[in-house]
Image (cartoon, rainbow, N blue to C red; front, side, top):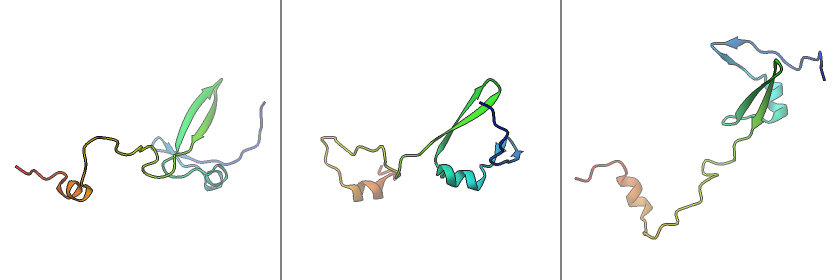
Length: 82
């Protein structure tokens, strides 16, 4: 199926192209989302992959046997105790 309709246009600069605001809003594209690029018979198709919400979206928590003290561990992180 071919279409002559142009939804939006942007210019490539330094190997980068901006996504027009109207398209970002319509597809709910936000910082952190990924774009998957597909070339099919000379036609470019872009798939939007939405970022899962929250910084720790994939974090299952600590399930170790050792007890922790987050305040002490945080304050001491990166400090050489020796």
